[in-house]
Image 1 (tube, rainbow, N blue to C red):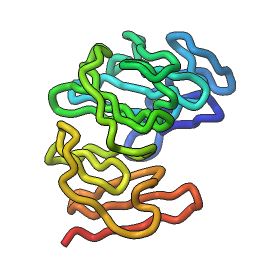
Image 2 (spheres, rainbow, N blue to C red; image 1 turned 90 degrees about the horizontal axis):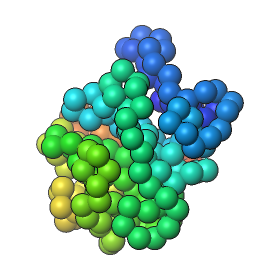
Image 3 (spheres, rainbow, N blue to C red; image 1 turned 30 degrees about the horizontal axis):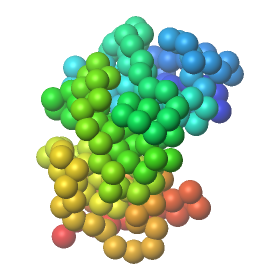
Image 4 (tube, rainbow, N blue to C red; image 1 turned 30 degrees about the vertical axis):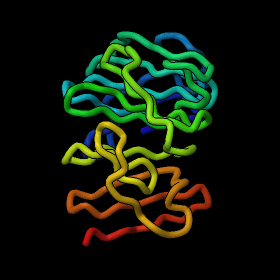
Length: 188
């Protein structure tokens, strides 16, 4: 769970009890154990943790499954490995890391150590990402394969600019808007 204004990331168990905290509540920074308005968190298949630190910074920070700092990458900019606003992050089964760079209207793809692999530049300024069980990525209201090719899209107002995306085990898609509206799309 992200607490952007608190500058912390929490890992909770199924009962909602805190089992790990990254960052120091109320203390912003860009060091190994601090954040400046983090935006998202993702867990790799091996348990490693990736945090996009995007509102006040422009980086991705990687931790081990037990919260030990491992590395970070990214600076403010428009080039490969740079970010305008790293907003969301997901990982795939091979350990690749997908990061929305909302302000530069792209998704950047990295290996597990932050090496730039590719970018998808036809995505618009999306904020939401979700990796499905069958290894496809919802980028806002557009479903893509792992090479960025669009496979399908949801229709309706606000679907392209969703601020958050969640998918149920049965395939229903929820899109959250900054206005507070949440749209549900039932898998047919």
